[in-house]
Length: 92
Image (cartoon, rainbow, N blue to C red; front, top):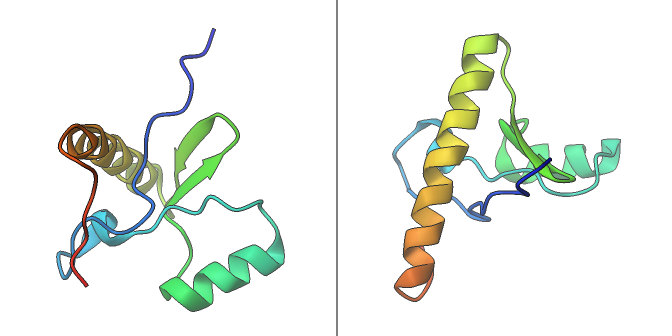
């Protein structure tokens, strides 16, 4: 049984904060070209990947991957709350 995918932020929620909150989730089909484009646009490899019915945290250690996934869950809560008040508005 699955509960489905959690809402996720499609843009960074915070500027100049550092860490995973600035990470844009990778949600394109997993191909070399898409990863190369993401890396060029975002300046690195994704830490959060949306694929199929799941969201995955990535890292060079299990602790980093767990932390990335925890941050994805936290931002999911922010997305839900923001939608209740008219949606996410990220300053430019």
